[in-house]
Amino acid sequence: MNQIIQFFRDLFTNPTELQDTRLPWWVMTGIAFSALVCASLYFQWWLEGEPCEQCVYIREAQFFILIAGALILVNPKQVGLKLAGLTGAWVGVIYGMVCSVKLAGIEKAMQKLNEGGDLFASGAGANACSLEPKFLTGLPLDQWWPTEFKPGGICGEFEWSLLGFGMADYCIVIFAAFGLCLAPLTYGFIKNIVKGKIGSAITS
Image (cartoon, rainbow, N blue to C red; front, side):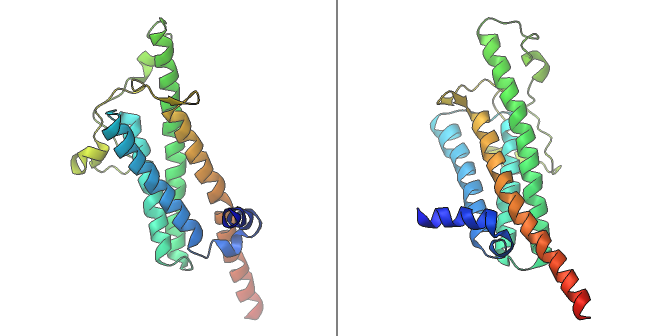
């Protein structure tokens, strides 16, 4: 517990040094990997909930974060790797948040529909899912890895909740947490770059 507290204390008080270590990137990679495993093994395999179009986009975003963290782990002090990794991580966070918010809206619309509301008044009719996803990368991930990226469900149709919140709501929380933790690390990286340039200018 003390180590966890110290980690978050360093994250927000000393991100300049922390972002040059492997610890935060192990954490980021581990959480992204755990989220993907949970989606595949628990929701898809155990609960037999086929992923919808927005679900596979959310998985793509989580893979962005996973790969970004793994890239930085190669050498956290290498500027090129860090820049590429941070860019990929932020793309994953923003894209994942957008898809999660959209899915949450569809889930709420479908809930109203199930309660006897009108299809288009609920908003569900305007947010129909496609079984032919168009991934952000432009790659045919559903053909390369169908068990992970091929949608087979309808957006908002899979009913699951914990403490009154649905799967999309928890995805929003996860991506918000990624962004909240990534922000000080990005700041620390930029601060190091600026200090390095200033230091070089003074000594030259």
